[in-house]
Image (cartoon, rainbow, N blue to C red; front, side, top):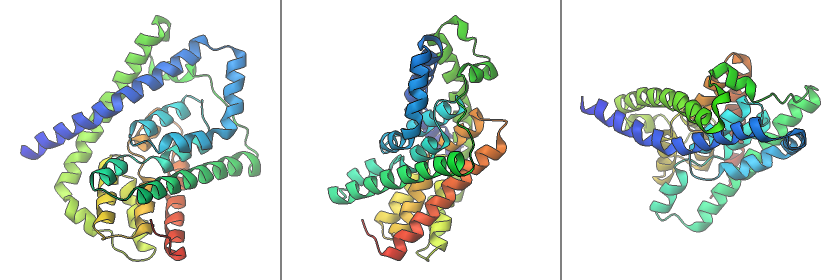
Length: 288
């Protein structure tokens, strides 16, 4: 019973932190749907080619909400897959608050954030290049109203009420999943979870990447603490933090449902690029 109470309390806090980001995202998307004209829509499409750069910059802010917002924007056809991946890879989640609370040198913090920004942006541009240039797939920006119809949000009632309805629908889903994850993590134990990640070349990156994929901000907490305690090196640390997109992956599967192969491809790309970057960091002897 005590474990359940703790899981519920943590889930409430995690959900409340995401709530404003989700609402603002839906509000902006509703505004785009109802108020923008053809010129603005065309500008959004043109800006989409530079989306990974903006996604990488936004992602370094220490909140899970940006990855959730990016998933919604991608499902709504506003941003490209490369922009989404850039946000996922650069998102810092709880890393920055932990670094600050542990009095980590500013140079270390800046170098880690800069690396995540750079790697996320490069990976995002490469994904868009691979998909749209080499495979010659056209960027098809959807009408945001398509997502609204699938969610039965009754947008005609106004952008505010529609945004509230969208937010409540999704936040309830996030809350339930977060409770289940908290119970699972609590049952396994953070110490046992920490023991899975050893400072073994390649193996460390592979396991750290899987831990980072856990759709919960707790994953970045575990990875960051392991690094600060010297249990893992820069390679596994960076891999785990790159894949640690918080609830973004969860929201991607929820909002972009019906496109299982597409979602699986994005998640696989997220994982593989993170592992490769981590291995390269170890091979090159890069430290932070």
